[in-house]
Length: 313
Image (tube, rainbow, N blue to C red; front, side):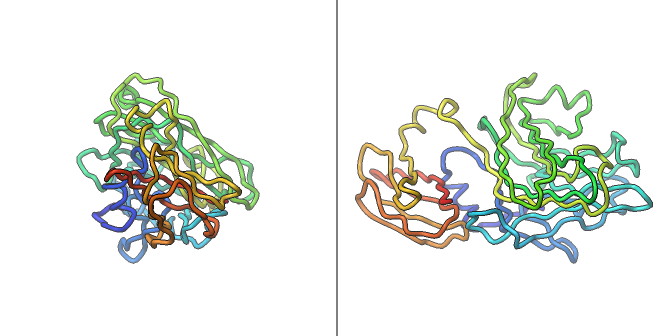
């Protein structure tokens, strides 16, 4: 579920974006209470589902302390499937809203969708990312079927997934990954967006993670852990002004922080919990003796602020 939450990461996304739009709470660090359970902030599950059968929803999501290797965070998102009268309900988490319109999993009235009139159930974006990266740990319960991630960039329409005939006309680009068991290990997936239209103006992104690529597929207690979702923008997709901004990057095995800039910079480094962990003034590089993890580097040159993300493995 979404709400106005002026955490450190939210302020960064509003004032110090590291280039282009990212999905809110993409590391699943922030959670909020829904009834007696919890959902990740900026994401939605069956707990906030709509539709004529939402009364049948049960909790299939929780925060997990099992995080991907090198993460600076302390939480990931766990979803799982369940069986009711022999019918499998896939685990499901989305930036949109779940519509429960039928007891038959494959019925077309069951879908996730962007509610463009409600920021609680939609994710606005106007940039055009090249790919989406996420970490997952998928543990199927006694079968070899695949879990699924689908991200769709679409125009200002209440797009649904799975698509109906009308929704198809509003697609700008899609990124889809059906992936097998990760054998108990965290695995990093990078999935390119295919810009095939027919729409051309990006206004929203609908992202969905499920425990099976097929509605009603798999078995009860299939489990997916998800962490650190990121939209990737290659240099060819950014503007000339963005290319002229400061870029921070690590070298020497992650022990040196470098700045690609025409001048020396002042900088501040935060971890993903919002703690200030390093700073410096008037430098081109600096020692980076910090633990493995993901960090946000705020660089200032001539009053202009740029924020980069660096990962120490």
